[in-house]
Image 1: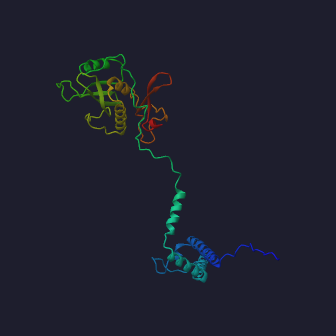
Image 2: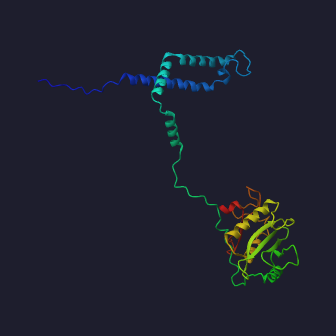
Image 3: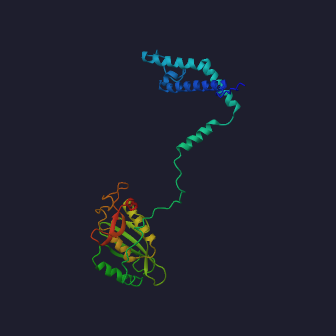
Length: 306
């Protein structure tokens, strides 16, 4: 009995697949030749009469470009390319799905970076180190409305860089809250402090501060005309708002640190003027200094974030 021989050979590939591959290859090669035309001067591919270009005989170096254009034109009109284009058109008409959208999605997937962790809500930057004042009121009587005149005389009599007096449009006006103090560092800055009390007879707190140039004649409720004093007002206001019920002694201690405002270097970048705004270091941080003692460290507003 003869054994049956089984044929395990691979079946031949259908001719339709081979024809499709040939057409794809033809279109791919023609597309590459079209992209190469971008190197040819644009004047050669403009239609006759377009624009205001005068018709002149091409120079010898352009003969090659004309030859390339003629060859590409002939290839486009050739039977293999026309058949491939017709097959592509028929395939598109049979399948109306948007192929380009799929390619676009795939491209976006490749360009999109890895997804980070869930986004957090935006939180404005608030320097932690500049949101507190030193506790210099321990063991000292609080400054109240009734004791304010005596405190001013005592403070001005001591060796402090800041000198102050009550700012009032009328001399006969009785002392009442809110009280505005005019604090001056000679030839450096004038700062108006607004004092208030949480209850009648309570210690005075500094509610706001506005800085001006030493020779500016602006009212206390306005704003300085100079950028450096505008920035200084913003920095002091941030510190006061970060610690409610800030005492008058604490703010005066801060103001004394601005005695060398225009000659003191930033502790971070070691510059007097900042690169961003060209202003001196108006920010202050209470920290331990090089000699071991605590004091106010000068920093530019941008350097407070470092």
